[in-house]
Length: 160
Image 1 (spheres, one colour):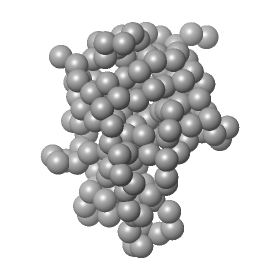
Image 2: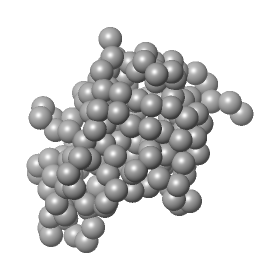
Image 3: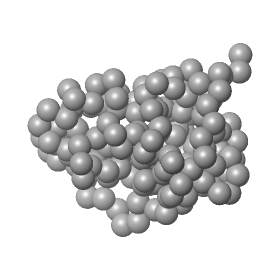
Image 4: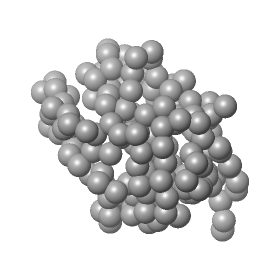
């Protein structure tokens, strides 16, 4: 069964400057057991919440199957780490996730391309290895809560 493995809601940017400088320290509590999502705005408490420049990319997902063992959201800076869902194949679709509190629906807009920081946070060669499987950037079109654990998944064609 598909599952939500990790959730991240971070109020700060950690990848600023040059990758050779290393990431800023993680704030306490950025990995959480649930997140609240608001339609058109993103993840409540996240650094991109309600930012106009990020409205079409305010929620990001990545598949655990795309990552080396032991790698998680603190290294890749996505909001949702899932298992059993081929998220990179969903561009242009509508994805609804229900972890028990009702469905949260997302419009999958584009890829979340990896950056040079991946070679620092994961290891040498990660940036290149994650090309084409760095996750997705989405716009939420319903409010709701997502929790770590099993998740029901519905994928449909995006509305015109």
